[in-house]
Length: 121
DNA sequence: GTTGTGACTTTTT
DNA sequence: GAAAAAGCCACAA
Image (cartoon, rainbow, N blue to C red; front, top):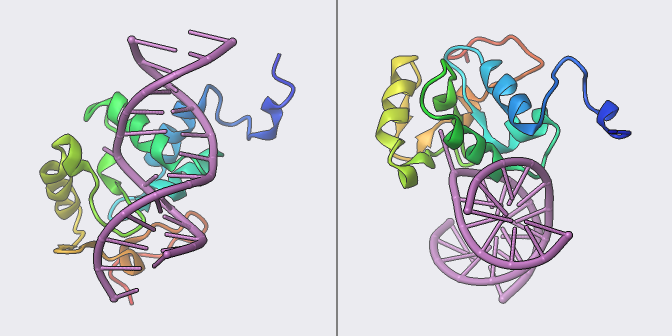
C-alpha cells in the first residue's frame, strides 16, 4: 500500500533510483545537469547525494549519460571514485568545454523546460 | 528495525 | 571571498 505514491508522476514507476536514471537519460546531448536538479526532477530535491550513489551503483555502463551529471559548482565530483578523468573526457566528447573550474553551468546547464541549444549565446 | 555512509547542497563563521 | 559545519535523503549492512 502506498497511499502517497500517487504524488509522483505515474509515467515513471519504481523507486527513487529508476526516476533518477530516467531523468539522467533525459539530459540532452551537449548538456549537463547538477545532482540537485536531477534529484529535484526525480522528486527528491534534497536527495542530491543519493543521486550520485544511484549512479555509482548503476555503474559506468548501461548507456546512461551519467557523465552529464555534475555538482552545483559545475565541477566534477567523480574524482573521489576515480571516474573524474573519464567523465571529463566524455564531456569533451560531447562538445562541452571543461575548464580548470569544471563546466560553465551558465552555458551548458540543461533546462528541462526549454529546448535551447548549447554554445548559443 | 537500527546504524552508518555518501559521485551533494546550503548556511554560517 | 574562503573555509567549515550542518542538513538532508535514500540505500546497504
